[in-house]
Amino acid sequence: MVEQPQVRTTEGVVQGRLRQGHAVFRGIPYARPPVGALRFAAPAPPRRWEGTRQAVEFGPVVPLSLPIDVPPQGTDWLTLNVGTPDPGAAGLPVLVWIPVGGYLSAASSDPMYDPAALADAGVVVVTINCRVGAEGFAYLDDVPPNRGFLDQIAALEWVQRNIAAFGGDPDRVTVGGVSAGAGSVAALLTMKSARGLFRRAIAHSVPGLHSTPALARQVTAAFADRLGATAPTAEALRDIDPWHLAAELTSFNAGLHAHRESWGRLTDTGTALCPVIDGEILPETPWTALTSARASGTELLVGHTRDEFRYFSVMSGRYGTFTEEDARAALESHAPRPDGARAYRVAFPQAGPEELVETVYSDALFRMPTQKLAEANAAAGGTSYLFELNWVAPALGGILGACHSLDVPLAFGTLNSPVGTQLIGEEPTPEAVALSRELQQGWVRFVTTGDAGWSAHRPGEHLTRVLDTESKTLPYPEQASRRIWEGHSPTPFDLS
Image 1 (cartoon, rainbow, N blue to C red):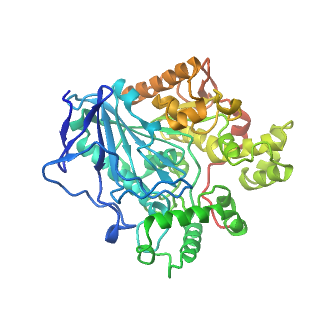
Image 2 (cartoon, rainbow, N blue to C red):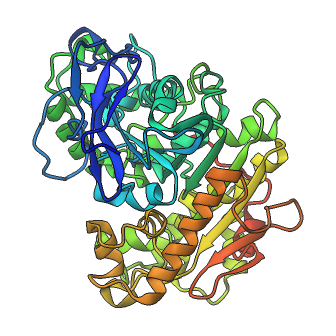
Image 3 (cartoon, rainbow, N blue to C red):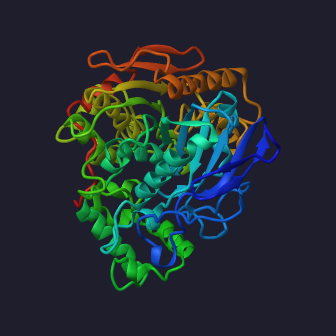
């Protein structure tokens, strides 16, 4: 490959660079900047350009509604990056990664998503930026809802138009994500406008995080009122600086518990503005769409960690402090009704408040939505490969357990990224390296062939790859929780 590889896209020529034996192209626009008249609108097609566009720097980070000090960098937020083993190749498998967290952040520049290891294994990796927070999910009266999902579809359409020029096969596209990125993947599985844009899907730690229109309208109205806006409309919010809007949403999220009587379970999530079951763009939840045969199944690699909630309890300073009152509140709010709270007490008779809180939150927020997506996809005619990560993160003396997001640096092989070192430590152990290699090989095999390398999840068997120092394929480890949730799919948050 040449030192400064060039590729002609449908909009113009981009010039990338060589890096660690593969070619990278960064900051390529897949839609116009969503500012001015386009703010809060559906994504508009990117403009063409003359000459050669330099594609060596990441595009600007979208406004983040998280307490992270990221200075504004520009407004060309809707960009993507391509890492390819060889732009002159043909027919390579493609992974499109959606790096969305909490529907509040989306930073494709995070070193955790470095494509080097996957590109070295022969995969073309695309990472995207898309709108989140108020820009992507505020339920405004005069613009389309779920704009973050519309951005993701626009990026996938760009991939279909252009990925062959980077050596990829548009017929072998896998879309993937973790947490809210996995929730995005689950939504894309069932959205009519996304059909035909990808063949396979990877979803790590799928959240059951959706709102009804009634709740979303009330939450957005309260947020608009906080801002002094005359109405919950794009017209009323359009002149507010995007980064100020994101900062205000951060503060708004921090005070959600004050609305518990009206907004119920939503107030426990820390995410006021999330995807809306709007009846059109996202007509229903992925679980009901798949189980009712209103959406077809696909080849799906899906899984969660054993101790999903532990990361949040440790990082918030609550680990080790949960009381019986906390356990009672968690069970009343998040166990399936009518008798889920009692069922948890019966299934875990020796559990103290800490274990009950962690179990019910892990189940309700991630584990059961993930497991049930595997079941629903199989029921819709797809093939589901389920995993659970049981390996304990070495950092902080092991108290993080097999926590949320631990599987991502393992799969990308980015153990030395900031998140990787936070969870795994400065010097990855041989066990960490070996487990990373195993999970990454599962990914590569799946995006290449559709087979993850272990037995598929079938009704009555619930076979699961349990990832640990010595990985094994076993019946689903969280059987007690699965039985409690049997017959209960995740439902949208609604007004209390």
